[in-house]
Length: 344
Image 1 (tube, rainbow, N blue to C red):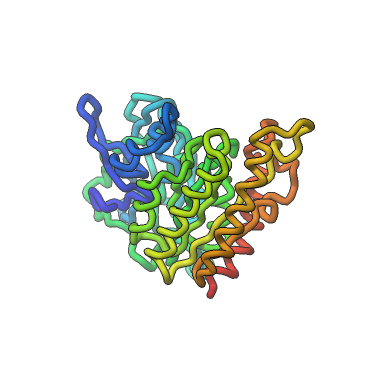
Image 2 (tube, rainbow, N blue to C red):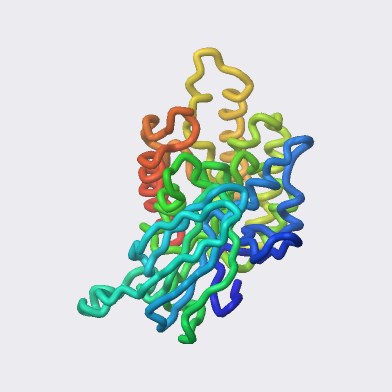
């Protein structure tokens, strides 16, 4: 999305709300956000409003920049990059407009230009990346009368990855969203990420399936399915929902890779006294593999979760969400598998 000569990456809606100044960075359109949930569980309508993985991107010849942002629903953290190069970290206090002062670093001009070439992002692109757990609000930018523009196609990665899934895809328990398994894999692949993780609420609603299938801004998609659905659905209902979203996405995008990711290892697989969650964990993975075999589509692939999280100690103490070490390990393993798929 382009606004104010800025690119708002991973932003589908700049929402203006009565009583609030600024524009809220939304990863999903309102009609999708408010369609999320099952029976009384509507937590997806909140989780989908976090600005995780959203970025403000621009190129300017100004040496000094002032960007005005605020946070809603809690304090927020912003990571700033010059292309692939880390610049700094800033904290946004909830409900307070914060001025982020940026200065062009002259040291980029002191090195041979060849050493700055060949990366997924041009170092000329300012990237203001929103961390997990808050909603970011844009209030304006001041480049002191200098030129400003969105990045050009050759200044950002060529391929875009739409990542749909649970809190694990959302990056929960990583200290920074920058360390989530999706971001770690994307760095190794040199691709751009559109984060559609929905913490605790990846339920494969029909509206979400239709929405993702008809988006035209991604080159390949991963569907990390199952872990959030085990509490609500018997295997038959899970199969119905999983089958619909997979079928819809592959049929609408026959030339784009669609990758199913089965449930990652977690405590439910190793319970001393197995419960319904244990059995659903097993059944769901079987169902996903059966759907993959049945569809037998050229653009449909499947990756087993236990081939990505290959070390159980990569989990945090809840024995469900990966730690930073776990996310990094998963990113490395997933990147190797995705590279083989997207290269074809």
